[in-house]
Each structure stands twice: as structure tokens, then as C-alpha cells.
Image (cartoon, rainbow, N blue to C red; front, side):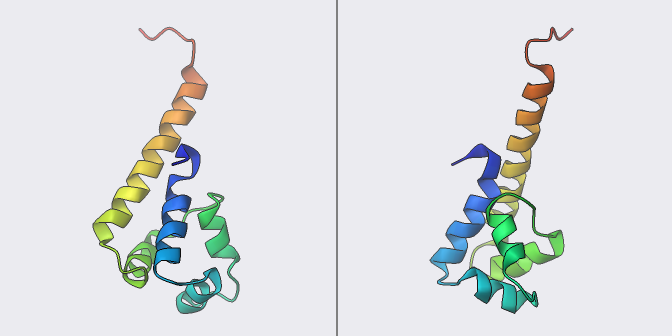
Length: 92
């Protein structure tokens, strides 16, 4: 899984497995466009915390697996950023 977009890939996979389109999800969440869902799945933005439980229910997955995906994605992004910032620098 692409470490830069772990959460987006996870969301897309679970949405597809639930048989839902981006438009279906957007409508159920009360969004007028599916652009929000597309942005989440492409890693351009992250769903609000308040939406994660709703998505877990909609995709019929355990909320813990949703939380794990969020945490794994966050850890991967922080690791990448730290490596970029400190690569080749001596740590005391």
C-alpha cells in the first residue's frame, strides 16, 4: 500500500467493497458533490473525525479498523516528513 496515501486507499477499497459510489457516499453524508470523497481517497484531504464513525457504519466495517487506518496513515506521513527533515543529519 502506498504509504503516502494509506488512508485514501483504505477508504476507496472499503467503499468499493460496500458497493457504493463516491456519489452515494456524498449523498448519505449530506454533501452536494462527491469531490470531498474523491479528495479523501486521493490523499488530498482527510475526513473529519466526526465522519469516520459514519463511514465505518456505512462501509460495514469495525470502527477500530477505521481508527487503525487513520493512525497508520498518520504515522506513515510523520515518518516521511521526519526523514525528509533530518535525513543525513547527525542525531545526538
